[in-house]
Length: 261
Image (cartoon, rainbow, N blue to C red; front, side, top):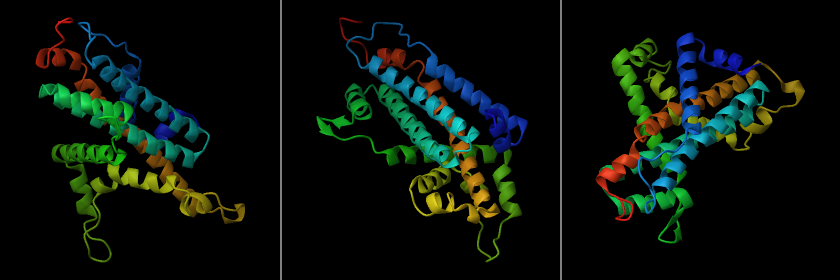
């Protein structure tokens, strides 16, 4: 199975495939472009900030490529674990760039430098204090929910699906399609399979005599989840695009050291 086969199998229609391919192409461009400044950034943290920005894109590309290489080899559980790592990278990169933008717009140099140190080295005032990954995941879940709500308001696709299956057999409200496809749902399931519990070990690596269609359906489910993680790169791309001119905005709002101005 080739990468194209995997993409076609998971996304299922040309429009979705084209959208995903564009996401991947744009991410690769950010990962390889040169860092250029319209002024000398010496005396500021801008070089480190923009270098870390680009490093999130590079790490994401590596993980994205790893997922497809593993799926091509039918290594579904390692691909799912890489998918979880990709979501955490997207989340941390998105939170980092969002905060840097906010501090620049507020002209808050002190706050920017303190937070940059926590993202970059995991320290705050010389004390170990890394940014917690779940803070980043919650940030990504929030912007993903806003994105899904925007799509539903514009196209009504999730509302229409929910109406078709409004009530479950027990008469309670069925879980919505938007929730089922949400980033948080994908992350929770990938986290579960990343742990070496019964489902991720005995159930998916059974004795050959216990191989059956049920096991294969679960493997297919986690294959889809691994690929779903790659789709979330769209959120990191949005922040990468918004921060293209961050050095110039820093210069205009915060200013430069007198020797570099």
